[in-house]
Length: 587
Image 1 (cartoon, rainbow, N blue to C red):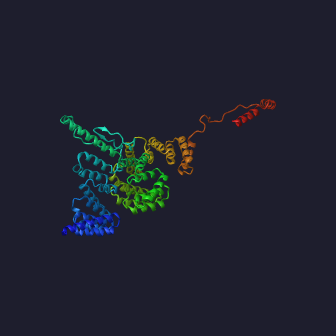
Image 2 (cartoon, helix red, strand yellow):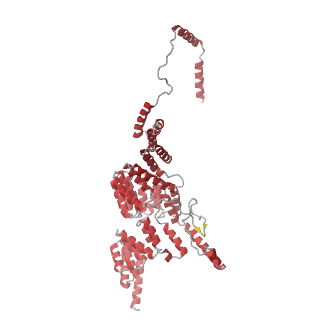
Image 3 (cartoon, rainbow, N blue to C red):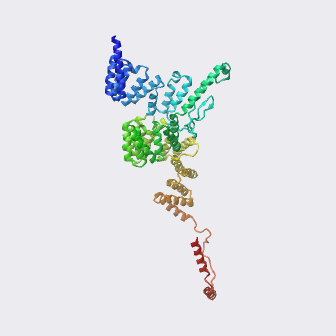
């Protein structure tokens, strides 16, 4: 046998050993035989598996050196670029890692893992994600009928919280005809994003030049394309994308229903679980959260999402210390898991531990470069500590990433209100309200009641009392027994000198919260003002009435017989009283 043949046979045997030990998770043995395969062949594929084995053993520097020393990072091979990106990411060099993922995706548009890591781990902001989707050569690597579907599938993964979405995408149309909803789709929601399949028979002139057989073939192809699109409507990724839109529009009830539908088909869907858990946190459904957390810990104790669920359960039940412990464990398992870092900061913020909360948010901002939420929460904590200048700085950073987010506008309005710049605060609040009403077809979600109350407060400061009452009443519709809102309505009535209404509203507030200091103090003040300004009896004469004197004899004559007749008269009054008592008892 020739020497080259012997080398090839031996190298093939070593490759099988590498695959075998990788599958058995015996990475040290796999690394040993991968090194021998590289020595024999110096094949790029063998070098790739050598670097892969080093990566699995967390020897990131060695893996990076292997790829660079062999010049593989310069080759148009997406798998090498993907692996290099993972290695750089593990070495906390996320900037170069994102570049590798972009290159891998440009070389192979089907390399979904590279795209998923860019989006899932917040490496790009919303604008950069759109630019990436436009730059990858989908049209060059896909046929036209597949390119539209490919692009729409990637669009489902893009950010949705950076800007409010006025409505969910319309249903799929093929040849300008809507496709009926398939089993498993939600009747109240559109089935899928808009996908207009390109066709070559869109004009009558071309149709007239096509033979009958070709025309029938095109019709068959169109039907097949429609069937493919209809099948894609059943994808759970599509339902998860719709659930994300509902969640970021604060429609938590419908979002929960949709995520539950997804989890019925796939009980542990990786993309759906964070949304489902976050929904239960917003709705305070601790029982469901407890069951889900237990199931995840039993089945997947090595995943960050499991301990994230446990931490969220303790956060909802008010046990912040326990919540922090489990959320910290989730961040240790996967340090790039953004929801765990944000919840970890919330657990400190709920107990007014502002410094610890900001430290968690700062770490999240470093790991989630394309997400504006850490900057928003840092600014919020700065505002609570009365550091107005620093709060405004972080709000501006958040707004640069997500300029259309109404939450940022609301918080900037709060900062302006604290700075006593009431006109500017009103502008921010009204702009946020316009954006919210633009995306809500029905009533405004309850979460926006503070915005309406703040509009009422700033209108009161600007002496717009009627508008202030209108906003406070709208907030009271969303939160019917909210004591601060009721007290605010009473206070505005007192400023308008409507003391009757003010007293009534303050009494309502105190009936719900007896120890409300503001309502108690203001009620005493309003009653004093009311007593000074209100006349007790409007028809009472100013002077004492004058009566003519009555002679003593006349009075005795009138009083004597009456007393006597009263003694001789039968006890009519007593009978009536007894009768009434008996009737009340019978009833």
